[in-house]
Length: 164
Image 1 (tube, one colour):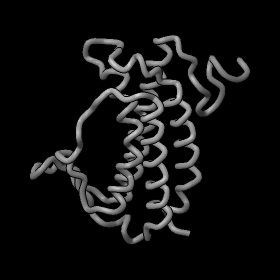
Image 2 (cartoon, one colour):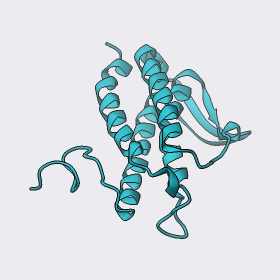
Image 3 (cartoon, rainbow, N blue to C red):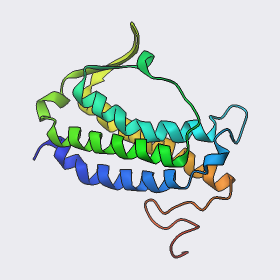
């Protein structure tokens, strides 16, 4: 079993939880944000829906060029779920098929010629999953502030499951 294959159960669990959070995002609240300095809900949801696609790029290319990223828009929850599902399928296939040696190769995040960082590909994969989980957590706070029931993630939430 490769390292990528060993990561699949954790990946599957995190992506299932993330999907449940995205499902709750109200399409009509895209521009809403909890504070003037905060990211709008719709942009945060779009980021979370797109991040699994970063994993495919990380595993299949030597760099991710943010200049190629189209920017943010306000999409319906249904559209975001479709994008998320496609990105998860591609990321899962990439994790499943990546040889261990490829995880030791260097990988870079850049915008055009500006390189933000270069790191070991395997480390970037884990950081990206953690980064996605961080933003998923932000989404749950936004949902709570909008009085949208928060789904269970690692155990019961205040809205789902038994109270302790």
